[in-house]
Length: 362
Image 1 (cartoon, rainbow, N blue to C red):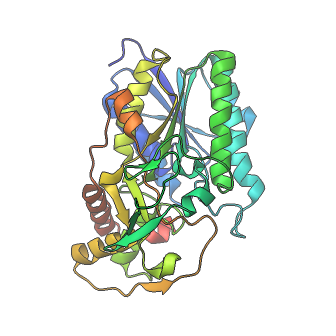
Image 2: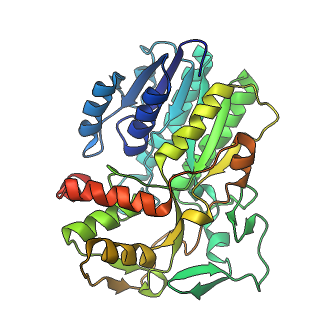
Image 3: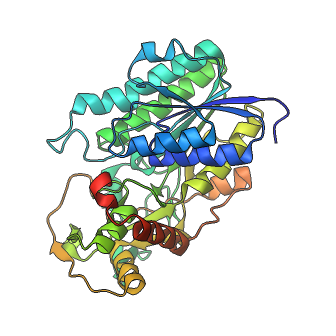
């Protein structure tokens, strides 16, 4: 695909998304030098370090929050930032530090951008759908259809939303969550560095990432958390919105994200006329509610489980958000190939092969 050796650094390389991206890059690029960087703070991340070794990826034990950890790194052509604390409850749940969330998600971005500036490298930021404003999302007109929420088109809809989902014009006004606002500030910094220092920059606002081997918890990696919990007979409950599980998100497999990244790496800065900030999700085709995911688990595993109902609200809970990724599809001739059902099935098969995964993951 490339005429010269492409040197790529992926931060957060031992996380679910980072490790999967490196696998796809190693399979797709014949002449790439791949390096992964991770602080190995997440339980289970050592397992992915072994995977990277098998792939021939050079591993650096480093922390994006530490500027000095970048000093000894060799020059690269691209940095893909897959390092983050991705929980919307981070910093407000009483278990994690608000300062650490900002240090990890924002200060880490500063260190990566300074490294890119000094080395003349391009930067790809994996951002999130949670950069969109919580209040306008919570005030979207919704109605119940079957076992999910859908947009009520009989009411006026705000700018940036349609039945296809939320697009890039939707409000990003806080509150967003500390996670969301730190990623939005990272986006703005990346665009400033692109303009000030002529760096190639691409920003991908990702939907719910999901696939086999994900470290699922109730506040992140919900598909893996739900399927593994069901398979292992762990208690589950619907939180908020009346306790019915009608809240809706869209799913994206990291292999589909990697396919887009390959196109962006190949283009470099050669598409100055195209938007730098894009939604990258599964779209309405891969959307699901918790109740629908639960019904899928019941059919797939052939067992029954009582799901508790808890209507109490948590900070930053949203009833409906689907990413409208039409701009990414048009700009890059790209679309997700892995369906919602295929993602669920991959996770289920992994759960059957790893019956105690939640002991590692959660």
